[in-house]
Length: 116
Image (cartoon, rainbow, N blue to C red; front, top):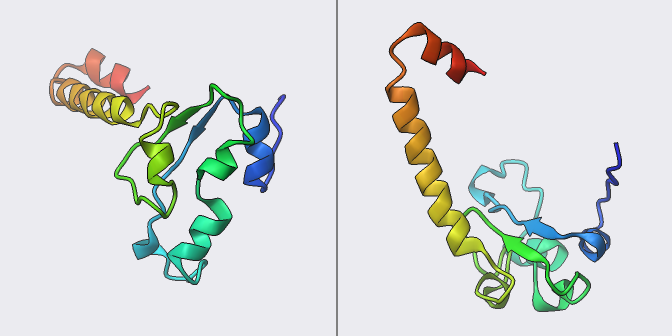
């Protein structure tokens, strides 16, 4: 399907047009997959050094909330390539619109549309 799968984040960054970083939820890590947040950041965190391997105009995304220094450094989160604040703002508006739409679904036709 034209998709290349890799477990190497540095390799993935080389050709990426955008990166969407997600919050690591250590509170849900019952299996202790990572001994520490520092180890997670060293292996997977988006840093200035790591982003130097990417295209100059790469878009950096994160839906928030950010764990700075865990999944992304502050320099990258607040940097020129970041669209995080816009993404968070738009995410709130989209969720509000969806909740409003779902709450207004009273007739059968609208309920059927929502199901798809």
